[in-house]
Image (cartoon, rainbow, N blue to C red):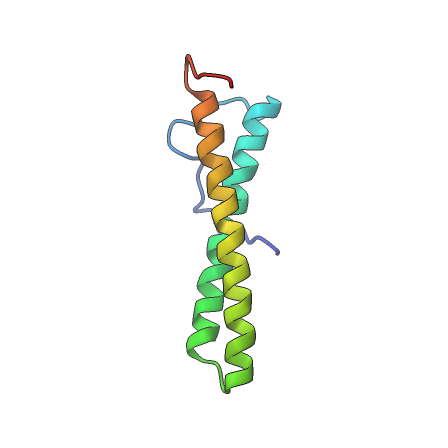
Length: 93
């Protein structure tokens, strides 16, 4: 998936002052970039779904939508875990 930078994306709240050279920060920001790309792709797939000309195309686009939703769920779970780890005093299991 290619990502297009429209200049409107910003780091997550409170992350503008982080050092992107830090591997932990870079990985965290990469997760947010992946989330943003997945959300854009999902929006486009949903438009294609509404405009599908036939049942076969609709089924193919629905399968693609399911894959994107599954991947988005995985990335959001990783973001939640990374946010927890970044909190002061976070428990390490």
